[in-house]
Length: 276
Length: 265
Image (cartoon, rainbow over all chains, first blue to last red; front, side):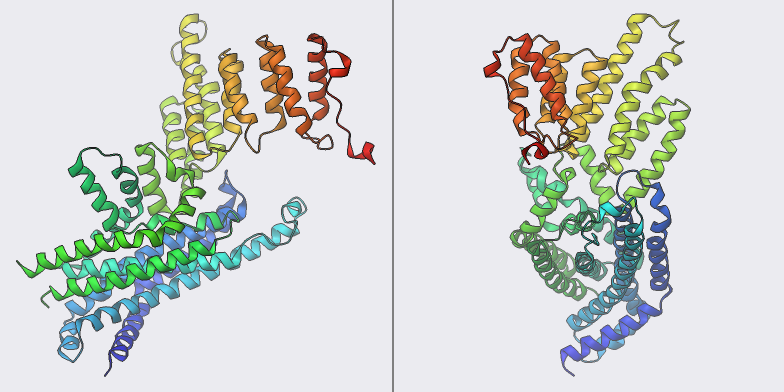
């Protein structure tokens, strides 16, 4: 059996196992409920236009619940194989650890793709519906002199870029899972890493100004060793009708590809050190 | 070396190296994101930490959290609860620094309402010595200005904030020189309302600097659109004429009136 076929089989099984889990269905339901509820919360907004508020809220739900799904899904599906001893059976066959890791990663990433695609389309539908209503209202008509304002194509791009970010997060979770002994430990550490990745840019800004060299080195290591997730935070500007430049999309796609490939290889290294 | 530690060391070194190598790929996107979000260029570490965690963990939910907290804050305002309201203003603006609504109202509550709460708490206007009342007003005005200064870090191109500071300084602190600086700053911003330049000139006149006021208005007036009602070109021309009278400018040297589109046709 060639490697691609093995990876596809493991990914397919992982995907099926994941979508049958309550966690996936629960997160889909909650995230969808949040996105739909933005429609009813919009009167609570003091700062922005209604459509901006709805898209802000929708992207918030995608990022928040998508991160939970990426971390908890990856950790749970990885440890299911370990705890049920199925990993032993799989790895006893001519299946290499790299194929096992890549299969698991692809399966979880596919589940997250389904989640992200559903939520992005739901958000677009709600925005489309509400924008249509606002365009028909006399007092808002002058806000739409050239027809629809929401950049639906760019919203799709934002959804896609979030999915890439989730790919990096899944890879990180797989690295942690390779070293960890329990599912809970993996989930907790991965969430801490997620927060560090969002705060990483602070270390980058700070390191040049630190005079004490050991501290400076430490901060520099922090700044480089974790990916910068803040850079994926592009949804807020698209929601303000700011078109997403191609250079930004290209940069984020390239960045994600580098991290996903290298981190998956590192996940294999961490998994190799593990006794099953 | 134990394989576990060996692998861990390898992973950490590789993660560092990939971070280093990926930096040039990330740069175009990071530049763009930073340009869009002035909050990411803050100097204050405390605010940055709040921002980072909030943006990272709450994402788009920060709008709704901030809005709900502001509604809760209105209870503190109704109860004239000074510490509660101060905390709420700080919290809401840290959670979502993007809407002007929180900054402007936070600053106004701090400088306009809070002094009265403090005086009432200390026994009321009848019982608190005049000098103490003045000190309280001064402190609260400065606290309001501090909020607006923080807002300007997030919204460097919004003229609302320097205008508000100018208003506090001119009307409530009687600091015309201080107000002058902020009206000038606001009037030089791209989206500045036309009245910012007029108020700047009025303040110069109040300070007895008529020649300077005239030169300022003479420089601004030709840039106005007489057909745009928001520019109020006729008001500025009236002020210019007053100054020309006061400064005894000969008729042939006076600023000519701008022609309207309708007149040109």
